Image 1 (tube, rainbow, N blue to C red):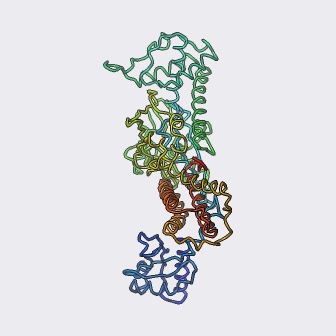
Image 2 (cartoon, rainbow, N blue to C red):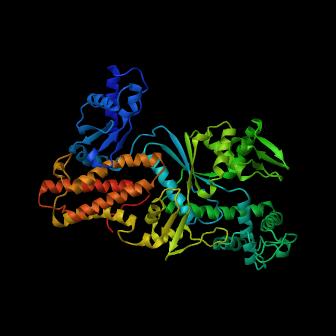
Image 3 (cartoon, rainbow, N blue to C red):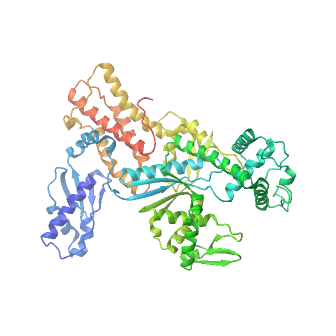
Length: 589
C-alpha cells in the first residue's frame, strides 16, 4: 500500500512537471509514512514542504496542485491537506479487505519483494574459534546473523552465508597442546596443567579419543615436556608468566612430537570441535553456503599477496624486527603489526587477506557480524581495505552485544578457557530451539540481552514466543472445531463476503496485516530482525483479542466465511514472520 501511494505521488509530480507547473528542478523522491493517528488518515507525506522552496510557492499551494494532479485510485477514499502542507491519504475500506485474498493467494511469498534482485551480499557470522563448543553468547550472533541473512533474502538479495574458520594461529596451538597434555595425564604422567590452557571437559574427551586409538604412541615423559619451560603464573606467587609458559609448552609439543604427530593432535582437536560446531548450528536451524578456512588464505598465497599490495602502496614499514601497517594514516588509533619479529603473520594479516578475498569474489556488500568486544577492530579492517585501494564502504560491521543468561534469578558464567560455561546445546535442550531463536532477536543487536530461562520455558502470555505460536495454533484449532461440528469452512474465492468484516477488532487486524510487507522491508534494510519479533507479538495480541471477543463458527454462512478468511490470513502472516526468525509455527500446543 505504501508503494502504491508513492506511485500515485510520482504520477502527480510527472503530470505537474509536464504541464510546466515549475521551472526545471530536481524533484525529491516522495517520502510516505504511516500516520500515528488515524484521524490524520492512513498515510501522509511532506512532499509539498520539500517542493515549496525550489517551486517558489507556499507549501499549501504546492500541496493543492499536487492533490489535484493525483490520478484516481480505488485504493484512496479521500485526500486531505493538513497544517502547513502535509498531504494525508485515507484509504478505502475495500483496500484493506482486498488484502485478505491477496495474502491467501501469495501464501509464503506475502511480504517478500524484489528490492535487492540481482545484488549479491555476503553475511559472515558466528565464526567462533574452534577451540571449544559454542556457548550461549555465540547463540545470539547465530540467531541474529541467520535472521539478517533470511531477511535480506526475503527482499530479493542473493545471500551467501559464510563461517570463517580460524584454523590457524596461536589459539589453535594452545588447544592442540592442551589436548596432548590431557592425553599424557591419561597415560599416567603427572602434569601441572598450564593456567592458560583450555580446561573444559571437551578437552578430556578429545584426549581420551587420542589415547583410545593410539595408546602410548604419543607419550613423552613429563620431565622432558617441562624441561626448560619458564614458570607459569600462579595465584599467590610471583615470577611466573602464563603467556611465556604456554608458548614454551607449544614449542615443546612440536619438538617432541615431530611434525606428523603434532599435526595429528592439532587436526584431531580442530575437526572434533568443528564437527561439534557444525552439528550445533544445524540443529539450531543455521546453515551456511561456505565454511571458509583461514589456513587456505596462506596456502593460496592470499596473505602474501595482500601484504605485497600494502607494501607496494607504501603502507608497510619495519620496526623492531616486525612489519607494521600504517593504519593510523587511515583513521585507526595506532599502527598495527602484520608480521611479528619471528616472521609469523598476525591474525590481522589474515583478516586483511580474508576481506580482500571477499571483495574479489564479487559481493556488492559484505556484512560481518561480530561480538561487541571487537568494536575496536572495525576501523583497522576498514583502514586496510582503503589502503588496498578497495571501497571500505562495501563492508558493514554489525556488532552484537553479549547475552547474559539467568536461571533462577542467578547469572550463569561463560568462559571457554576455563571450561565453565553454558553451551548453546544445553540452552537448546533446556528451552527449545524456537524459544532460543526468538529470545535472541527480541532486542536490537547493540543492546545487552538478559536471557531469562524461566520465562523462555513458561507456557503463558508472558512468554513472547509461546504467545505468538499459540496464536497460530489457535487458528488451526478453529478449523479442527469446525470439522468436529461438521461445518464447511473452505473459504470462498476472492473478496466475497469480506464486506461483513466491520468490527473494530477486524479493522485493526486488517491494518496490521497491511503493515507486514513494509515491516519486512524496513527490517531487512536496517538489519533489525527485532522489528519482526515486535510485530508478531502485536499481531498475536490482536488475534487473541479478536478470538476472545467474537465467535468465528457462527450460523451466518457469509459472516463465518469472512471471519475464517481473515484468521487464515493472520495465520499465514504469523507463519511467514516466524519463519524469518527461524521459529516454527505449530498447529497444536
